Image (tube, rainbow, N blue to C red):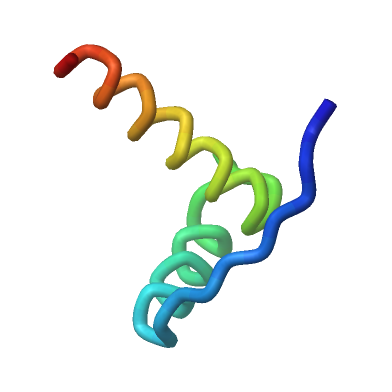
Length: 49
């Protein structure tokens, strides 16, 4: 089951995310982008341990 969270990011990053979403069909929405990015980061961190 997914949990609802809230994040705060700076305006520059938000604009980059929005641009990416417009130009890349890989992500459905901001939540999907964040979840994908978090998964990728967590996998990398687990490899480094």
